[in-house]
Length: 286
Image (cartoon, rainbow, N blue to C red; front, side, top):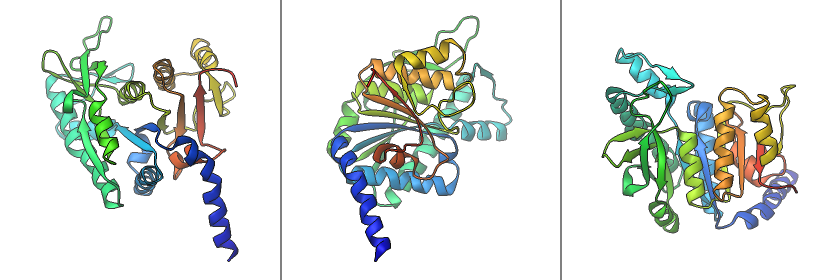
């Protein structure tokens, strides 16, 4: 009997968070090991379904870099990166869209639906969701790599109202009618801002933001996050993730989180417990 009592106590511990976030939108960037390991894929799908059933509105934006790279390799096409961004010519763009929209997106939707959710797959091209423009860079033509020009959240809001879970592939369409490959973190941040989401959560393959001694920083103000970038404590791929979070907070998102997607049920731990599994970035002093 005691083990059942403990289960009920665990549920009751989540009650204040369910009440706090009921009816709120939470945008989750899904990537890394959580998209590859079967155990983590299943736990993520179940996390999202539970969130929807208790009254939250999860919106998923996914990546797919390793899957794109794998197919390009099979086709004999070498991937080239500049500052972590894949140079995308027209041939590569066809592969990117095929993998992200035709394969990865459908797999995520199928997994959520398999466990009892109601997911719908979208790309940024659907319903004019993401208007894109060619990324401007100094001295390097990145090809069909784009930036988000604008987000039309109406299609997402409609799906939310009808109890569906939107799953979004990060490609957009330009005024020229061309398709652009956009960084998934950036897309998640822009969508979170457009929806005025309660939270933006980025799943990564690291603990979160680390200090100079490689210890996890559990919470950061906007000013502290900017300082970590400026003094180069934050390096490599963590810089664009922090910048994405700062941009989302500036756009109206209440809080942003960079969490360890290698931890089973990481999303639920971050949303419904005091402990959390990563770094929270917030707007002002507490």
